[in-house]
Each structure stands twice: as structure tokens, then as C-alpha cells.
Length: 588
Image 1: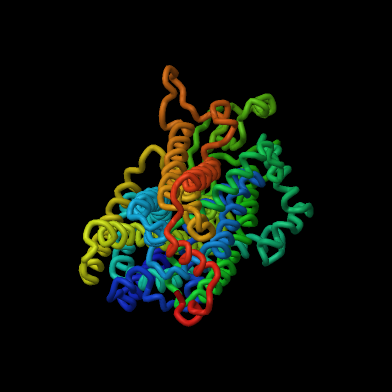
Image 2 (image 1 turned 60 degrees about the horizontal axis):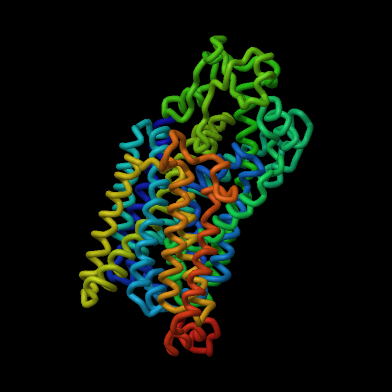
């Protein structure tokens, strides 16, 4: 049986399962569409939350980022994990206590303002749309390689599948589909990791294998990796990070951005009561940990396998000839995610860091510039092929990558749909809309959102590479402070909340667009994306934390000089934070 046939069986079987679940769990009311009727079991919700949270960025990109950057890129692992803990401990139970359907509805009711609700809707749509581009792009990458179709065709197929189970089932259908997707993605992620860990270290547990001895050389795996990358001019894999400020701010930005992601927050509205929100948060953390504990091992082992495939006898010896390159390189070259140019006409592959500090050594070896470009996003997807694992493992990883992308895409699309139908149409344009009319509006909104996100995935804007950073930065600077102040401060009023959200949102968007080089600096012919041009040396990827501080300061300052919230709002905040017994009975 060919590899293509195996891939089709795994991917097609998983898609059939998702659509069958959607038909079985079709939403019949707005409550089922928005929050699955608030009757989801905590364990089931925890698994669905894990799938919703672990997007293509977690499954496909995170290990690739760590693989390329080593210790310095572990900030993504720390930030995303810490952010989920922050969300679970500080926000989820209290938001569930309010008993609302959406994040903008909570903000509108807490700050007694339709203007605050509309501001939150705008922020939510921008966050979700920018984030969903990455998911659709990830689906396109997986399709283009494993199903041997163009990325455009892959995106359209993915959109059709999401359309069926998201539009039909709403949150109810998405919840049970995400449970299936979690099972697929976690099996797909861990099985190759176990195989590779056994091969390289003899240890079947990848997180422990990372700190075990390399089987072939007998030295610790990380020491072996350090020596290999050092021979190729790269910084040691375990090297410290010189710019601690940026690392700290990026970690913080990812943490609070995570805690402000609306598609994850709404998952905690689906359980029957507040105690269930806490339990589902705990279960989700367990399910997330299964992948996140393996990611550093997958990253390091994939990097070592990649380099030793090209330089089987070490960098100082001859690299492999291009005509003898393994099949996995040929397969990924066809997607354009691996590119090769023979710069010294020797017919061999020279893959190294051609930074100025290494140029003399490179010239001594007869190298004339790095000849291979490897996209970080292929590391996890190509891992089974690099390690020569069985064909069925390759098919499994294909299904897993698509499950990760589609599960988060569905959650984001539902957040967009809910914001438009429930917060914009029912809360602003037509408050007297019927339940049936609102459900129809929700489905139409989601269908339109799918079409738009697919189009953006096919024709990504110039900033698509930084789309995840933009989404997290905006969530950190706009939504998270509003939620925190809404729960833990009785003094912040509607004017302060609106001004704070706008200040955080605008400052972050302007900084990211300006300093990532999407605008030209007036009077120059160069882009602004250099550390010398950054404000106080702060990377655009790290500015979300600064935007959050601006939001907090503006909201608190404006509130201090304006009238306090009405007494009933202050009592509402106090009742949510200090329940008096009613919550245990009602769950609200």
C-alpha cells in the first residue's frame, strides 16, 4: 500500500468521524450553539479545551521554533503553559460564575456599557481573525505534503470540513468533535516521539530521553546536539539568552495573551456549574501537559536527526551528495518548504549558519554560503520521515496536524460567530431578535467567517508570518486587563474600561506594524525591523505585555477621576468573588 493511500485512509477516516459527530450533536437552540447547553462533563470539557488550545502553533510550529532556536525559544513553551494556568486559576471560575455566553457580553454587563461591549467585539474579531489565518495556513501545509494537493485545494477541503461540523453543531458539535481531535493529535504527536526517543537514547519516555545519553556516542543527548550545531556555526542549543528583558516580556505577553484568548475562555461557559469549571481547567492542564512535556524532546531530537542526516560523519567530513538526498527531503522540496541551491557547485548539501563569525571556518571547508533553507513548520510533520518510521506513523502525523489546526480554527470561528450574532446583532442592532433568528444569524456569521478566513489563508496579508504574535499581543493588551479589572476591581467604571482597551489595543497594533517593518520609516529606504530601532530595545513580539500595562494604567487612572460604577455593579462584582451560597445551587 502506497504512502499516499495510507495518508488518505487516516485523514479521510478522521474527517468522516468529525462530520458524523457533528450530525449526531447538531445544535437545536442558541444555548446549545453558543455553550453546548452548559451541560458538558468536566473531563470531556477538559479534553475539548486542550484540543481548542493546542492549535497548529502548538502541534506544528512550537517544536519547530524550539528546534531552531534552542533554549532561547523555550519562552513559547513557558508563556503558553503559564498562560493557561493563569486563565484556569484567575479567570475561568469567576467568568463561569457570571453565567454569560460570550466574553464581550461579560464586559458589556460588568461595565454597564454597550460601548464597552462593542469595543470588546472589535478586539475579539481582530484577535480571532488574525489567529485563524495561522490555523488555515497550517492546514494548507499539511494537505500540500500528505495529500499531494496544492495548499489552496487543501485550505478549501479544510474549510468544507469545518463548515459541516461547526455550522451544524455550534459549540455542541465542536465540543465532541474536539474530543475526537484531541485523541487523534495526542496519539499522532506522542507515538513518533516515543519511537525517536527509543532510537536515539533507548528511553521510551521522550521528556526523560531528552536528558539521557545519546546511544551512538555515549554522551548526553544535549551535549551531542551542542557539539553538532557548534560545528556548523550555530549557537549552542543550550546557550543562555543575552537579552533577558525581551525574553521576560515575550513570556509575559504570551501568558496574558493566552489568558485573554476568547475562544479558550468560552469553553468554561459550557459546564453546568462553577466547580465544574475548576475541574475542567485542571483536566485540560493534564491533557495539555502530555504534549507540552514532549515538545522540547521532539524539538531537540528532530534537530539532531536533521543535521546528522545531512552530515552523517560530522560537519568536518563531507556532507551527503544532493543526488543521494533521502526521500523525505525530496518530498518536502515539492512543497517549497525546503529549498536548495548549490552555491559552490560541488553537488553536495552545505547546511550551516553563514553568519560573519563563521565565514572563515566555512571558507576553509570550501563552503560558499548556506545552501539549504528549511521551514521550521516541517519539523514535527517531517519527523517520522526523517527518522525512517513506518508509513502508518506518517499517516497518523498527517491526521494529527490537521486535527490540531481544525480544532482551534473551529473554536476561533465560533468566537467570531458568537460575537457577531449574540453581541453585535442581538446586543446592539436588533435586541428583540427571536431565538430561531439568532441561531440562523449565528450560522450565517460562521459561514461568512469560514469563507473570509479561507480567503485570507489563500491570500495571506504581508504580516502572516507574525500573525500569532499579533493575536496574542492584542489579546494581552486589550481583553486580559479588562477581564482582570472587571473581576478584581469594583472601582473601574465603563469609561475607564473603554479607554484602557482602546489604549492597549491601539498602542500594540501600531508598535507591531511599525517595528516589524510593515511600514517604511519616513525619509529612509530601509525597514524598521532592526533591534537598533526598537523602543528601549523591546521586540515587537514582546510588546503585548507593555500594551497590557498601558491598558491597566489608563483604565485605573481614568476611573479614579470619573464617577464610580453603580452600587448594583459593585455588589455584582463582590458576589462573583465572594459567593454566599447561591452559586452552589444555581451554578451562576
